Length: 242
Image 1 (cartoon, rainbow, N blue to C red):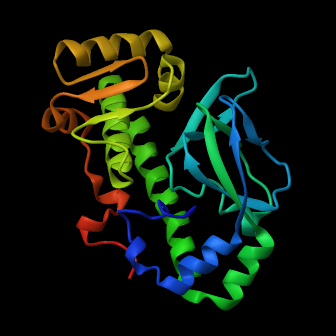
Image 2: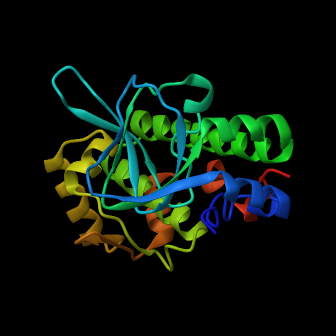
């Protein structure tokens, strides 16, 4: 199923068989995108919402000098632009990080879902609320943590989200970000990222080489990051949609 990872580990069980079939029937235009491919340009009209099937997609904004700030990273199972349905455009750019596979849900199909499937509509809404919860946590991370804490928090979050969809195990997962990407997600310079990664490695907390993350000491990394996964609303937190 194209939607097999949608809300996996975060309340997917609330989808009944009919809703799963409706969602599957609406998904179309499955295609593979190259690395660093621009999906949506800021301000451009949007007529479909994109479900990420494989790979990673980021949301980002550029300042007047062209410096990029990554404001979200999406993992398989995420709808990356559901809010484009009511808003009709995005206030940021969307691009792949590495190669990615996506499926599209047309806004016409979404309109029918809203009109006919209230439970599925609530779960799609819940998906956008998860994005908002993560945005709030990213604001906290950028505003209150030092460089080491920011990077540690980013890796803790990615590990938790990828574990939910079966793409991380025992703190080990693939993540095709460059050090420049990591800097743009954490609001620090590339040089500073290099120093932080070296420090985390020397403390035997985490290694990150050639796009592979290995968290060596989860408890100490979480403490450094002040990381509490409650904002991710995982199934075992008891806070999923019912």
